[in-house]
Image 1 (cartoon, helix red, strand yellow):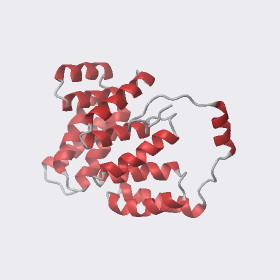
Image 2 (cartoon, one colour):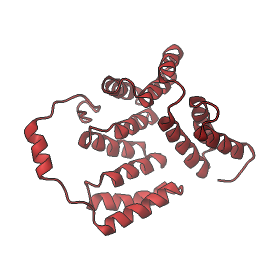
Image 3 (cartoon, one colour):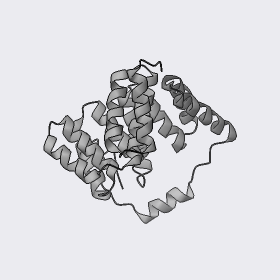
Image 4 (cartoon, one colour):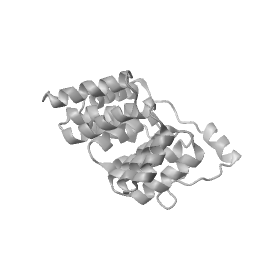
Length: 224
């Protein structure tokens, strides 16, 4: 189980049976119909390329429904895409503590730390995640990118070889970042993410083809 609040980064901690029983007994109420509708609308706004507007509704929603995990996750991503890496990191740190069985929030926390150039903390978290999930190629890819940022090309290549070229889940993340960056006019960032997406997948992959199509739009001067 990950505890993201010890020394600012997650560590493995034991879970007492009594605590688990207490959490189950005090399970929070599910969001009502109005909250679900607000979440659905905010998600559409976020996916249409307007994360700042989505953050407004999602912040209020998460305040009223603090246990609404899905809303908090989308809010964290929206904050990330408004370049509020610190705010996004706080959201994903909290999610990592509350839901340690999944690693999605922890992976986004790594991205937030990397974006803030907190490479030492990002490295520590990645290594801990790798101990728990040694075959997860998303972690290996992030370790490769981390090594590249740290000017360790040989280590980066080693992680890339371990990760292989077929991780569709990670490629989808990079393609999403490329698409949203393109919509906001952040063309250099979009090109970099497209390049990563294409490099990760073999020819004939639908995700790779989508990345190539987006690249063609960029080269032709297509508008977001």
